[in-house]
Image (cartoon, rainbow, N blue to C red; front, side, top):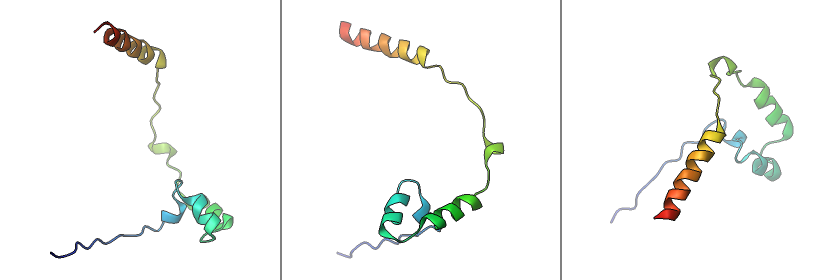
Length: 73
């Protein structure tokens, strides 16, 4: 049986990914200056955003109703 081969494409921003950036800094593969430079070069996407309003009170009431119905069953 042939062994499956996978190719991993490394992205240019991968070391700066918020989920792993501290690990890369600790390992010394990037420095704080590199991170600061990368963040400064990022485009401002604020114009692409849309403001939304979230009401947690309604959601909490719905969740309580579901829990109450589950308790009755």
